[in-house]
Length: 148
Image 1: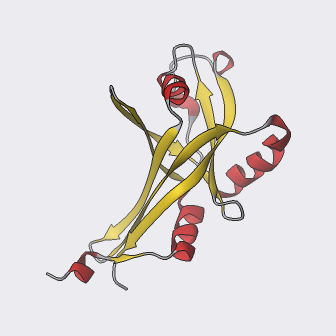
Image 2 (image 1 turned 90 degrees about the vertical axis):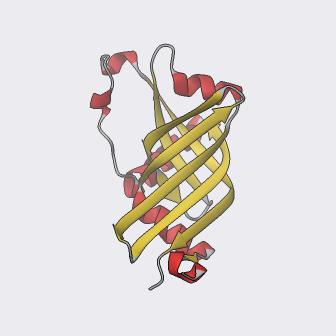
């Protein structure tokens, strides 16, 4: 089997279209003690090449603890229709809180592109959760897709 049969690299425009249309992926944190990966909704801002997240934090949040230790993360997204019809993208960068004055614009980007997940996964009342906007400032990105 040739390397091409395993897919081809995506260019920056193809990666951007993929991120814009996906809206959900796996966000991975890590440090010297191990890693933590969670499914997350996101909106991709193609103008500023960043991914927008609305994090919810409860008391003793594992996610918050990882962000405080190291804000480097990876986001992985994929779409699999068949062995001959698939694509995947991995981006890496740093997570930064969005300044409050940019929250409205950030929320608009998120609403336009994210696949909204339910908050029903939490075992506590919503009023016990804190919500904050974060952006993944992309340093590296790679994508592969099936040969079409």
